Every structure is written in structure tokens, then in C-alpha cells.
Image (cartoon, rainbow, N blue to C red; front, side, top):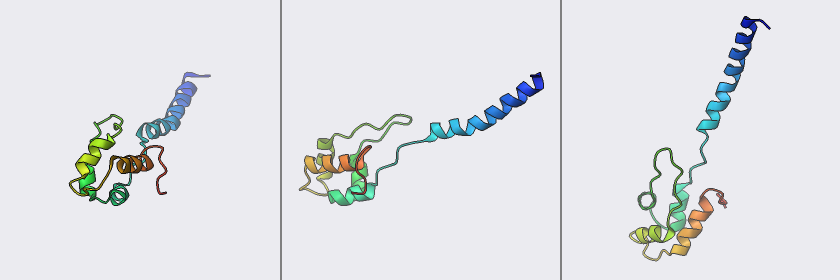
Length: 100
């Protein structure tokens, strides 16, 4: 194999693999449907968003503490329980049964 052939083969391989590597790095888990979660909890979407911890850039979001979230949500729905928050977060979080 000549030097030109090797360079051509390398450039072709690089051109074919670059998009695959880039798309693998950009894949992120689907975001939860905040509107559905808010409806399920009987609160506004804005209130729900303000009560959930914000993910740090480049970090995996932490699992929200259902008791803290429930306490915060009581401003919109005084009857909300930690168990309800835990159920909705579990249903709509990673690995949850979304849409059910």
C-alpha cells in the first residue's frame, strides 16, 4: 500500500467515523414532561420547576428529594404528600413508565 493510499484510507475512515462519534456524545436522556407532572401533582408548571433542583452543566441531574419537593409544592397544593411526589417523579423520571 502506498503512502497516498494509506492517507486516503485514513481520511475516509475519519470522515465515516466522525459523525458517529459526535452523535454518541450528544445523546441525552429525554426530558420529563413538566406540564404532565405538574398536572398530576395539581400545581403550576412554574411552581414545579422552581421546586426541583437545577442540574449542573455537564453533570447528571440528581434525584430530587421527594420530601423537599413536596414541602415546596405545598404553596400551590397544600394537600400534596411526599408519596404523591415520589410516585409522579418515579413515573416520569429515567426508567419510569412515561405516558402511563
